[in-house]
Amino acid sequence: MADTLENHPQPPAELCGCPVDCALSFKNGSFLAIGPGGRGLVLKRLDAECLWKGQLHPLVRDRLNRARELAHPGLANLFGVSREGDEAYLMWEYVEGTAFDEHIAASKCGQRELAALARELILTVDLLHMQGIVHGALVASNIIVTPAGGIRLTHISPHLFADPTVDTGCVIALLEQLVESRGESASPLGQVLAEAHQQGMPLRQLGTKLAILSGPISGEAIEADPRPVSKSRFGAWFGAAAATVIALAAAAGLWYAVQGGHFSASASHVPPAAIDAGQ
Image (cartoon, rainbow, N blue to C red; front, side):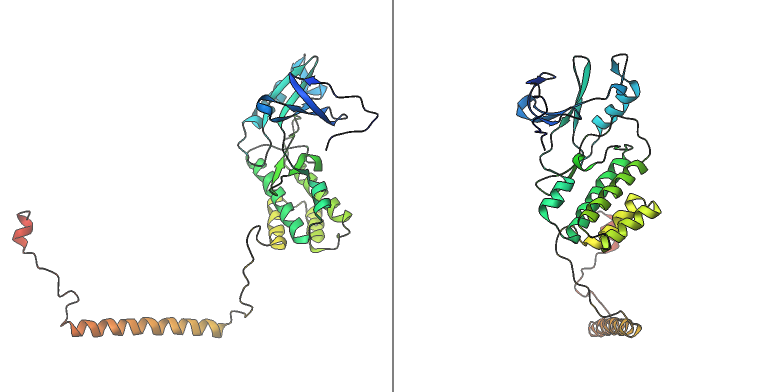
């Protein structure tokens, strides 16, 4: 959401060679601009500590290059870094949608829907970790729920985060805050999150627990047979299967006897000489 407080100055008309549409956050130096072909770009100012002798710090450059090369469907594309005077700006793809917390507040989703959305967030972050990148800035404004209901992460921190537990703690804390704001800390979802917080639970394990709460992400749930699978029922199934096999064997034996001991009476006989001659 654009920062429209009246006491802020007007955004620049142009930045890094791109027309500026509006300010997303004056505090963070983040602006929505119009890039080539009319596509939306987010220009976000780099912190001064990311620069060294007026250039990108080599370690920061390596981290941003890795983020730029990622093949991750749940991550906004990083197009590059551009200079504007003495400052540098990251150029990110603009993702249409709503910030994670705003979406949940506006949609008034139930426990199951919230658990499913939380699980998708966890799967998205876990996939990022599998590719060797720690996000480092997982706040609600950097987690976008798209119009189709998917999760896209934006603005990977340029700082040198390497421990995945940084992201794990941020995700659990964010979800706990959202559940608490809804007055549902004692709900099954709230209890799972509290357990994850206390135990330092890995994201993948938390995702498994949320899958139980949310049920299938798409499609209708299949109702299971409420009757327990007892030994007597298993015995009945086994007996029926055995009787079927015996009946089939008896029928095959009867057919064999009727055919005079030949299963294939109509098959033509080819003499060995014909085979040897290649006929």
